[in-house]
Length: 243
Image (cartoon, rainbow, N blue to C red; front, side):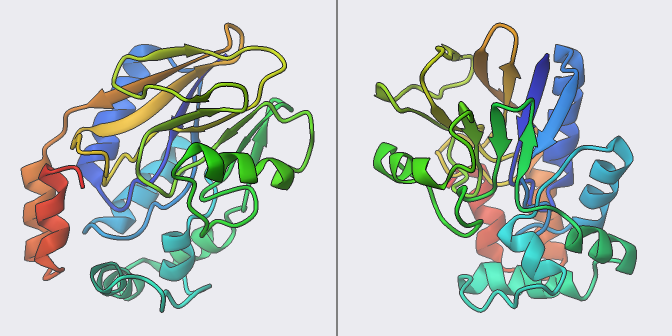
């Protein structure tokens, strides 16, 4: 089965529309979302509506938890806090209740699991190989071969036996039996690896391969909507830089 893995949409409608269009073109049979539909950008309801309409299995990110009132986001950086506070007042009641019901983890096909930050905590960051290896003990089952994660906004591929590997667009990795992997497809709505294109991944569970993918979207339009909403200008500026 070809499974598209997406994460960290962050209320960026233009980015997720472009990504879903490319996923459909590539013939994925299933889509899994690793959380953070809310935060940073200016169209949370539109993004949530789209994910709900498509019936995409989605887990709860830290911005989702803050936007629906389960957390207060006191530890967010200033711009992030202002954006999520703005969204708290604007997310519709039905979307707020939907966010509240999202799970912490998404197991699928027995040997794979999706998390937001890490298997232990949605707020944890996995940014290097050592971070990933520390999380092996937090996996709920020794049968889990691949843990897909988001939160860092950086495409990442960490192998228990081998270290870290390339994540540039088009890179295809073969996943080997007996090994375990932590894979971040990159962020749809706010990449931070100096590539402003929206990121996603394609996992083939039969061939056991994972491909890193990027797609162009209308960054200027998203930035304009951020400014028109009165959100912090740095949130608009960073999109074009991919930081």
